[in-house]
Image (cartoon, rainbow, N blue to C red; front, side, top):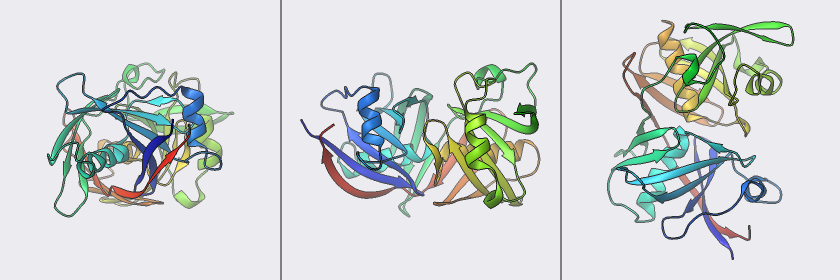
Length: 275
């Protein structure tokens, strides 16, 4: 039986989106990994599966990385899911509540065609990341192969580490990224953001995503980096986040308040494949 999908992207962070509102999605991890292969499958950073809601949300959506593992949250994915739901006629509402493993988030289709997402309240306690540390701190030293780095840690429903760099183009994303992703102090692995501050409202960012490698954009990574920058007094909202695939805008009013993420959500093509 062939599987229908829609290829979408948010600032270059690309997805295969599947409507499972009428029939259950049953592919196992190996099958999901085959679909994620860019030579022998569809190819994507994440697979997004839309299902009927099981709580007070409008829909539930699940996020699977290209390696087949399941993720808790995805900001760019949430925007694409909202666009998909409208384009497929699953709902005519401009505002939606979407249930994820990382919690319920709210999306809004804006008049200019972009999508704004209430990503929820960021969490900083090490146990909430999860991150092995003592007391909560704005930054933590972490040892990688005998070298010490300073990182911020933030949960946006999924775990993030943020490093401040002088130049993202020269940053060791492909070498340090995977070492930090699987560092023993991150029991559930971690997404790693390399942030260059241009001024108090603009940053450049590259993200090595857990289970996907470096991607052209990462919505939760943009939120985590901007929040860390605001938390440490280096940034002020709104923060324009320039990623290799495009630009996102992050707003946050501070502790206890939700983070808002705005950016594009684009449909590329429709297809079907034998899983």
